[in-house]
Image (cartoon, rainbow, N blue to C red; front, side, top):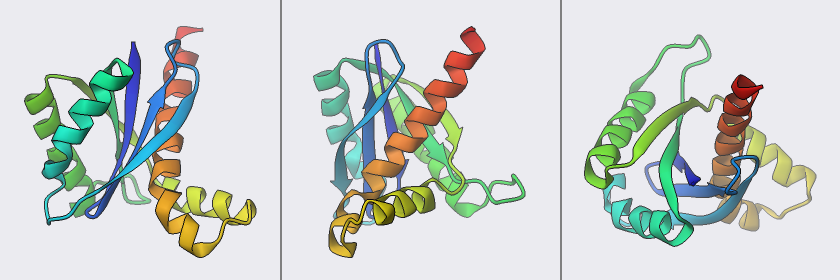
Length: 142
């Protein structure tokens, strides 16, 4: 089965999906949140899970540099608990420190314009979160 990776923000959620073997992550879309609550994205996330045959979700957990969990991290944990309850999916958290910055640097290095970067940075961050999770779990299997 496939796994969805999510980079959860207050205005956008980047989404990535793994391949069947759990080796690679590919970005699929950015969900734009119209209101104040990322929970409004649950319907679209459920559609993407069904469309891609995913049964697990990995959500980036933005920890502070000292490893503690601040307010933004707690919001992501709440989001994870809610989506697990609502969709009945197995949800895993992955330490995502600096993934959005790394995604931004990657896009700059690829000479992507500022306007285009804004549209895809969350999706690229979701790919980095999911790929990191896949690599971490695949290394445990060997």
